[in-house]
Image 1: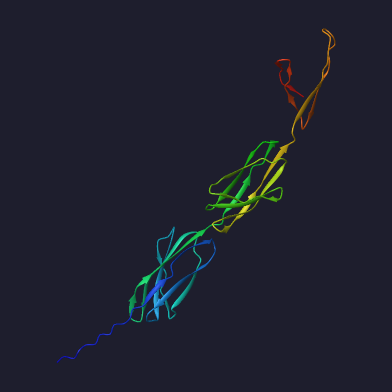
Image 2 (image 1 turned 30 degrees about the vertical axis):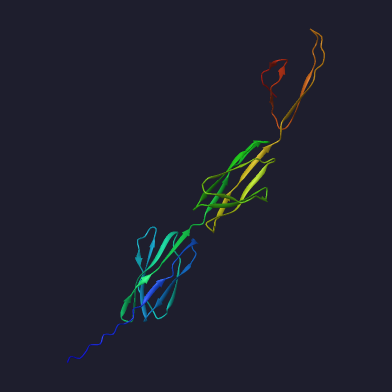
Length: 239
């Protein structure tokens, strides 16, 4: 009779990268969490793929820990981390999971729109952005905070109609949870209201010396006025 062979089946290790999809601001750090099970010690590899780089395999890591924490600071854009392989004891094992990070650059916002208007008129202010929308911007009018404004486009046009000369300033901007920087400003100068009042006149004799008509103005000059004599509109008069 032959002697029976004994075959030992060794348990296989397994590795899982705890799956998630998160957002970060440029320069921020997060942590890969890799869970290992089965016989150790373990040797595993993982890959990193970005918007501008094909998947690159990181050098093998050997450990006896069943939970490995790896800090990462991905670049701006989308980065995907995946396990490639795992070995433990004398056997390879299965891998699973995917960790995706979307990193946003800090936005910028620049305000412009210096102008002069007459009372009651409206004028546009332009806010130019860089970065990824949506953009949330806060601003002041003569130092008084205004309600936050949200925009999905650049430039953003704000239409204002101040009653008096007003200085507008941006105070902060953010997008996708990332704070940015602001610059610029806009001064809207409002001219005083113009008025013209005609007075005088009276009865005159035909062929006589006539009478005096007075026109009084308020507001900044010089002025140009138009008046009517009876049914007839007269030419503009500068003064």
